[in-house]
Image (cartoon, rainbow, N blue to C red; front, top):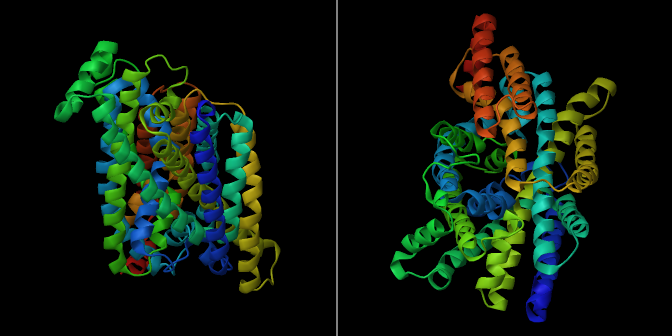
Amino acid sequence: MLTESSLLLWTVIILLVAYFGLVTWIGKKGSAHSKSMNGFATARGKVSPWLVGASFAASYSSANLFIGVPGLAYQHGTSVLWYTLGCFGVSWVGLLIFAKTFWRYGKKFGRVSTVPEWLGRRYNSKTLQVIVSLLILFNVYYIVGQNVGLATIFETVIGIPYFWGIIIGVTITILYIGLGGAFAQMITDGIQGLFMAVASILIFISFFWTIGGGINVFGELTKQLKAVDPNLTTFVGVDGPYNSVLAIMAVQFLLFSFILMPHLLNKILSIETEEELAPFTLSSGIVLFVISTLMVLGGLAARVLFPTLNSADSAIPMYVIESFPSIIAAIMIVGIISAILSSTDSLYLGVTTSIGNDFYKVLAPVFKKNISQAKLDAQSVNVAKGSLVLVGLLSLYISLDRPDSLSILIQFSFSAIISGILAPITLGYFWKKATNYGAIAAVITGASLYVVFTQFNVIANIYLAMFFASLASFVLMGVIGLLTATKEHEELVLKKIS
């Protein structure tokens, strides 16, 4: 804990105060771009595509890659590297495949602001848009995971009690997102992504004095892990979530699909022109490679150096404190905190814009028959900003009961969403017989089956549960599409994509 070193403690506190001051200032600057629903949700064309790409990578990574997955590596060893492989390889390939088509569809549909709206326009279904907006509420559990990661850092490093650590993180994030919307979120996340990349590179460099072995540092790390426990160096884990070839394949399937998460796809909607997609995808790939690979290796090194930690999720904070000079350690700790905030703000923005844009904006005209579009848009923004407080309080309440594994909690939340939206988005690209009836059935079936599989222990492995739930939604949507697609429907789809 940093309380043992006053220099380190005060350096971290000063850096955090300066950092929180900076992001709040950026939030205030972004208020000019957040007066409309589209501006609040996407800030389209207001941020450099290079920075949007770094923001994508930072939002992708979160507490999961900086705290949770290194914690799993600490527990289960090298088999966890299959997850890392999927992050910088499979996910980026998925982004390359989906980005251009998703952007083009978004433009054809009239510059949509959110993923639920994209699906609603694609299938000409307000019902589908509302259902998907409700499904996105599963991201509250994802936010809880970020809260837990941030509170763990504050508790482990600074000595701030877990409860107050959660309150600090929730308050700061709500403040600058409420002020600046997507503009503030992408600017701050872009900066955080670069910060995270530097911290990851420093973790790798430190191996040369913590693990040793010179150019054979990875061989030395493997040797020392084997000395702790031979099971830590197997390609397929003996226990844990990576304990079979089928489970590892399911992990790759999940990570390929992960880029379809609404808080990530919204980054594509913020790109102004098709030419900007190239720097966006290149920037996201480079930053994602660095931050997804090197930090996880720190979890393996921590197992060698500190084999008896009470909490696996404290592996990276402990490694940083013990392996670096005070000033460098303080900078890295702030980098880790920024990693957590980078996803938290994206998730808050994704959930609240969906509440405003896809729930209130769709349903309000049903009860307010003569409301003008300008007034409806203004009210939708106010609803989105107001729901920030409610979502923050809900996530804070759930966070009070600390989960056993931060990574497993986070992956549960996004797997539930992916299980529902994967089939409608994918088939919406490539199949003209994909209908609104099939899409609605797929969303409900995929998400419901995933919850049943995991909560009733029908399929214990969360990755396999997602795979089979998604497979069922594909099959059901295919069958319903074949039964309900008409000539008029196919012509409408072709008109939309031409």
